[in-house]
Length: 127
Image 1 (cartoon, rainbow, N blue to C red):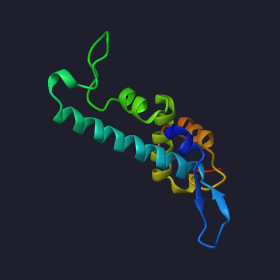
Image 2: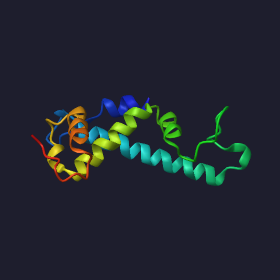
Image 3: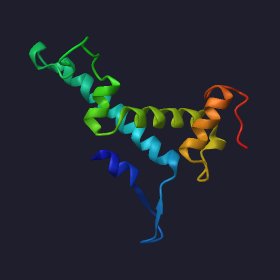
């Protein structure tokens, strides 16, 4: 449900009814922010719930920590891989703003991240 709202997000121009699609970075930043907010809500729920009301108790295996990535993904209705890729995209663009332009798709940024060793690598350059 929320995934479709984020994926199909649009922004309104102040000039009137003209609408422009969000850039990949803007969409991913929105998704990463949504995931962080959901994580905080889940952690607060655990703090206020009794032991019998815990939200992160799987049927089998070890208990997950409060606000785990799987719980966040389930809460916002977005696959874990999409959240991870969005977070990586945002981290990379924050470290290298030249990768955040409208022509840079998510897969371009993540490919550059893999090839150059991550967001903090000083050798990461666009083009």
